[in-house]
Image (cartoon, rainbow, N blue to C red):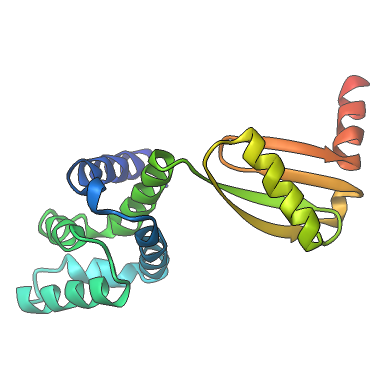
Length: 179
């Protein structure tokens, strides 16, 4: 994402949250994620919404359908119409993503990618969550994946937290110390 687009998207998201933050629930974040992904995969649809050839009634119907399909929170229709009017509707997916990021920060929700050298048992996954609970205060969501290149061990990563205990890391540290 280029800097101008990113800056604009962030500003629209911040302005939206100044007005509607109190109306957005945790369950709305998943709806926004689904809508953002849907829109990201269909950039041509957003381009068409900016064309003056489309009637206002058709644009309104499309926005209504989008908000209904994804059960978007209050204020999203107003945001869509503002973006259509200013010919910036192509930013909508990015704005939704920024809204999600800002709201998750406000609610102290952290997403972790847990990578291990082998599949983790239910018990091991519970240990990981307990470890993260003690390290990060807030709500924790984990996605798990296997990466055999770790050789043995585990890696926990979010946007602001990284913890790794693996053979791969030890080898990397050893290699760096030899330089």
